[in-house]
Amino acid sequence: MRGLVRLLAVLGLGGALMLPAAAAQAHDVLEQTTPADGSTVQSVPASVVLTFDHTPIGIGTEIQVKDPAGTNQADGAPSIVDGNVTQPIKPGAPAGTYTVVWRVVSADSHPIEGTFTFTAKTAGAAQTGSAAAGQQQPSSPEAASAPGTAAPSSSSSPTPELWIPLAAAALVLIAVLAFLTRRAVRRAAEE
Image 1 (tube, one colour):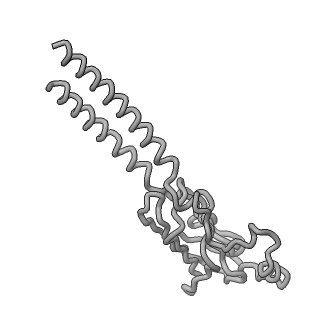
Image 2: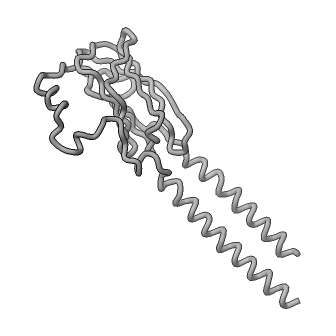
């Protein structure tokens, strides 16, 4: 009976120790923006990039790039590659202070959101006729893929950073459980 009580105590303690570590690793954190928050750039960039510590889920991701008049200058859907979420900006977007309003779904399926600003001294480069023609007729299969689509393996499946510690903790817990059970059986046999 004492062995069973000890076993349950160890299992409870092991489970309690696993939960905070898993929760702390699950939420994505915005590490960097390009352009940087509050920065001034020479001209409106072709895109803004948000870099997260984990790969966000593609579903529900939305980024608005609002010009000084409040018009959304985002051009199409954002794309997700690893921890980078890239939102193209319309060619010829006007100069001024931009507010980027973003919302992504974290790797743990919780939505996170925020804003940042940057100032562009001059308007963005206008799209040339040959560049527009090049976009309509992609030259490779990679270029033909729709913007904003992420590989299912990188954006919709749980990240290895979350599963590896959980699997390791589960193995340790199983080993401790086996040791204590074996020990309790031995003691019962000796009595």
